[in-house]
Image (cartoon, rainbow, N blue to C red; front, side, top):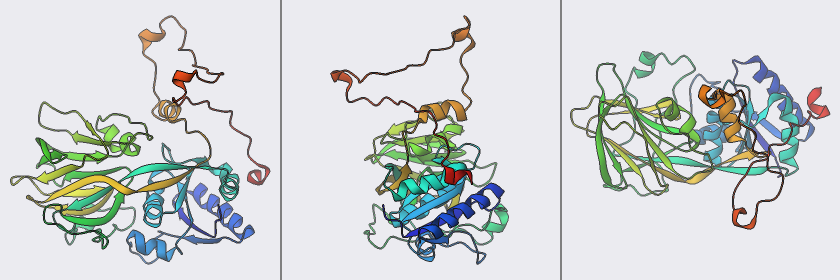
Length: 361
């Protein structure tokens, strides 16, 4: 791949991220690649994704230096521009990031030399009964603490505004879209529709729709299922619902999920990938569906999602299962699968390679 323009998204609060940014800039200087810091709030405000990528020179590749939150910031920009995104892991969980800081230069070499795969991830798109707005004074009330809020999403100009289908908003989510209560003593009451049919009316702290990628984020914390990032599905999960049915519902990618605030509901905040983007009142609704565009993430080798799940979530074995003192054996496959299993994906995780000489210096 020819990389002419690189956009850099850095977690400025982590010294190791700042140091890794120096390595990226040095690599760009060596290979005559334009490198621009983007989404760094230099002017004291936030811009929408299109303005940010234009300020970053429409990068071919977005590199994020931080944890999953920093990756989400970079993914928002990369999805807007159709760029590749490479996540460098400097966080605490790291389900989304791809390489360590020690391997950042060899990873950039691999991208430049086409030694990588594209990991295509589902994104969520959004329509609403009206434009999202954040009430005056809400930002200071929240006390955000991590920089100013993003502006409310703009209306997409390439889509038709329809009375029944609502206003198309120029925003995508990699993890989730969340409708949540604004005050502690007032839950949201929401009618939930799947493929246009009423599933149930919920009274809950929040209701969220997640991608498979986002199934290990808020949805997981709310008791939702873990879904392979290779799957194609939407995951609807209620948070602390006051009803017997409190389970997640997994829908097909062409089955949209609608959330309508009922007349006696309290107001609700709309968060997209953890960022407050607007407030809805009773009678308002949003429709969440699989976006036509995809996130294109750099993958340098097979992703051991389930090994990472075991490690990062600190999964432990049931005491009864290991009472005899023998741990579960590894499923080691050394021969090609037989013909009737040739369509299956079995991961063989190679030993971690030693850092390249350029990464040691």
